[in-house]
Length: 103
Image 1 (spheres, rainbow, N blue to C red):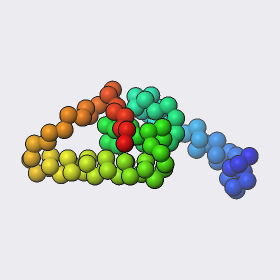
Image 2 (image 1 turned 90 degrees about the horizontal axis):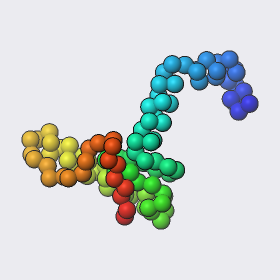
Image 3 (image 1 turned 45 degrees about the vertical axis):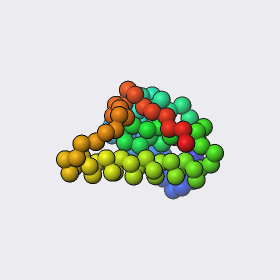
Image 4 (image 1 turned 135 degrees about the vertical axis):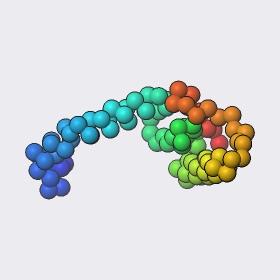
């Protein structure tokens, strides 16, 4: 009903929704959700290393600040890697070991 109200034909919606590519992406998203340990929203994962959820911050603004900090940290590490500088991070880069960041 929602899509029909937006002017999308039911047949068109059904065809796109049931497409192989949508199914593949949905399965991948579900797998990553489990692997990252995401149990609710909001939750963001930065570079497969850090999981930041709404239960660990006091506001959405704080969540954005934490995520931005982690993004900059990862960019700096990537920059060091590309220049051949050894990095000293001990954070696992694995889907099997997500880390929860508590500000």
